[in-house]
View (cartoon, rainbow, N blue to C red):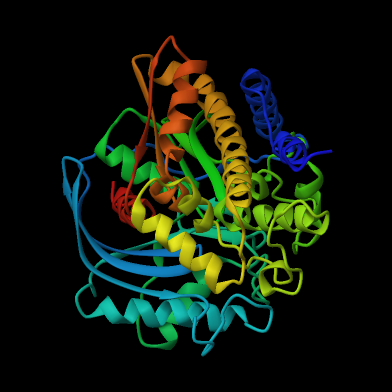
Length: 434
């Protein structure tokens, strides 16, 4: 069999026919229905205890974004009419690139992680001592009220100990009190709820929020759940765990090497944490079979998991000379020398991995838009955030195109929502003052 045929077959493993979008959407909605009824489901209906904001919320608030690879704390001023200003921002990675600290491993305790958060809050406290605090926490949690939630489990390969099952707000409050800051979170929200809040603060047509960055998740206005004031509630679905999807050979290899095999199935097929690793596993297999020009099994890239970052896929898809040069430099540094045929194979495989991700995400969005269409018949907008939407060429527009093709009877759009997790936390904190 020719190398070209092998590459075509490999790309075929990632192929999801567009005709499957409606079927996947129906399965996604079926899982949501089961979760709503309290039955076994790979999805959840986790209440936020919040409804859509009015867009008129005002005031200064501390916003903490705990999720992904970086921890961010902002002082946000909401000005109404969907307008806001970020007065101050401090940010630190959870894992120091220079190796001085690492708050992602099981060697780290919950006390240490939240002390790290508290230290960042202290950097803006002098300018925000009378402000309420909103916390965006982008890991599975069981919400008990607007300001109380328990961590269910870590995802994205984080695993600090002495945290699961504990109240997130209490852990942060104790860490703050330990350094002399007497404040409790007024609102604790999932990051997708934060994106929803920030998007809806600007545009009332927003009916869902979604993030595709390190991980993948979405939330929506759920007609089957109401707040205490009889308004439609925003619920978190933990969409990254959607399981009614076909794993291919490479998906299975990746899944078995993670800390949570069998879990977060969709996340492992669409998010920035895993797309580069899927590509690395695929290329290594082709190299071992003799179909990847320039393959050298001794090179670090083929032996070190996650050594092929997802941004490499964005460089391959880009037409900009700057990113083409970044890719050329990257392959040279990694000792990955290949010919024109090899580069063509890389482009085809990366495109196949990304196209599958776009189709699967579009299917879940189709489900959500069908589910809450009754709430807004004229226009439906999904607020989105995350590195793939921001940096991956054609990712947002590709998903939007699929949605418009699948739902030609209505106006649908994706709205990139910058700083959604932070601004959303400020809006949520403001809503507790109603």
